[in-house]
Length: 234
Image (cartoon, rainbow, N blue to C red; front, side):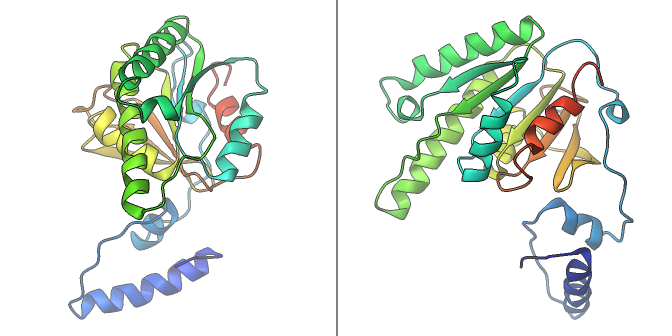
């Protein structure tokens, strides 16, 4: 369903609870706002950087895999900020078995170097959409791109101040496959529809702040605003 307001979610959830009470069972794949309503929690204020207790040292790691137009516009707005180091990953290289390892290695080296210098670093895929004629082909392409980003995150040895993953699938695979997350605490939101996790002790970076930024969420400057909010001068 598409909800225009919390009232829509509340109405839907009431019907859902009635269905569950009659014995129905559901698996949810939803945005963060549904979880709050389903759990009967009151809205919390939008979190600030200081609320999260971020260290002032180190650089952030921003991973952008989503290629929807809104993500690309937000990424272009962020690219105007001089403080971010840009690591572009050629999608065609990730899809080429002969070039894939070199592309990942290059991205890892550049990212590690920038984070070691305590610079905010954005790893992003080229914006040109690569697709095939068949659904299976498109799924395979998406899987290879996601696996490439996961390999890059796995290769990053420097612990970032925080990680922001842009894109629903991107944030999921980076968390589970790139960082080994099995459990996390949802602390709240840093912008409407942008939840913040604190990673569990089993992850590669226990206690790290992880921002899940869906691809189609936010206005043009939303990504810029979140990165500024999380900055070392917060």
